[in-house]
Length: 359
Image 1 (cartoon, one colour):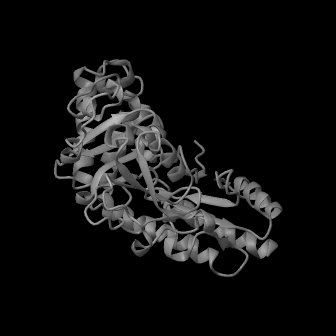
Image 2: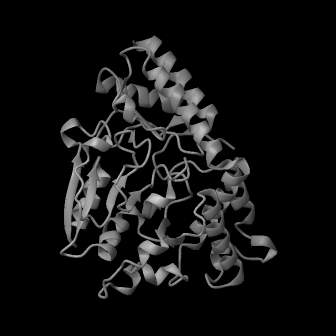
Image 3: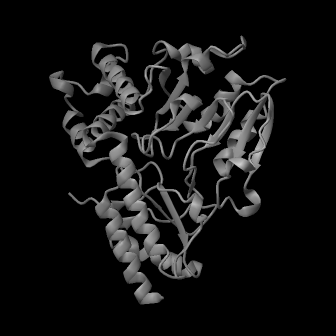
C-alpha cells in the first residue's frame, strides 16, 4: 500500500489506525454480517456508536455535561444560517469578528435575521492577523459574539478566546477543533465541520450550552433548523458512517493522550515549518507572526512560477495538497492532528532542498 504525505486543508488526512479499523469492519461490523452504514440509525448498534461519540467528546473537551452535543448535516455553511435563525431577532444585535472569508459568509447570513455589529474587520490588512482584545468594538447589548477560531485560507488563528465581558461566544471551530483546550464556560455554541480534525466530510458537530439553548425565544423556526429539535434525541437520519468514523477518531485521540498530547505535537510541527520559512527571504509567511496558525501554515515564494514548480516537485516527492486556496494563492500546509510529524519533517527537508536549488 502506498500512502503519501497528505497536507490537504479538508477533507483532510485521517489516522491510519482509524482507516484500518474501518476497513476491517466495513463488510462485517462486530460480527453482525452487515456494515454499520447498512443498519438502522435507531438500532442498538448505531445508538451505541452515537452515544459513545458524544461521551468521548464530552470527556476530551471537559464539557462537564453542560452542552448538548449534536451531529448535524450541511457543514459549517449551514451553521452560518442556523445560529442567527435560532438566536437573533430583527430587533437584536450580534457581534461578528471578521477575520476572513468564512467570517464574511457568516456575517452575510446573520444579516438576514437581525443586526450585525462588525466589531473588527481585517480586510484592509489582507486578513493577515487576528485582532487584539483592545481592538474589538463590541456592542453593549450583543446577543452573542461570533468568531472563527482558525482561518484556513490566511493561516491565522486566535491564540485564546476573545474577551467579551461575559457575552456568550459562538465559534466556527471547524479547522482547529480538538487540537487544543477550550475555555468552555465562555461559549454559548461551538460548531465544526468534521473534515479537518474530527473525521470525514458529511457531519458537523454542534455543541450548544444548555443554558444558552434556553434563551431561544422564537417560535417560528422550521422544525429541522430548530436546535431544540436535536438537543435531546436523534430527530432524523444522521450521516451514520461519518459519525462512526468520528467515534473512532475520538477513541484514537483519547488513546494518544487527549488534547494535551496533540497541542504539544501540533506546536512542534508548526514550529518546524515556521523555522524553515523564517530562515531567509526565499519563503515568506503570509500571516503576522503573533497570529500564525498551528493548523494551516501559509507562505509564498518569490514568484508564482516558482510556486507552481514547488507544488509540482513536492508532489513528485509524495508531498501532496500544498497548493494555497484559490482566493489567496501561494502554498499551504495543513497539519491537523492526523498529519504525522514525519510528514512535516519530510516537507521541511524538501523545502530546504528546494531553496538550495532555486534560491
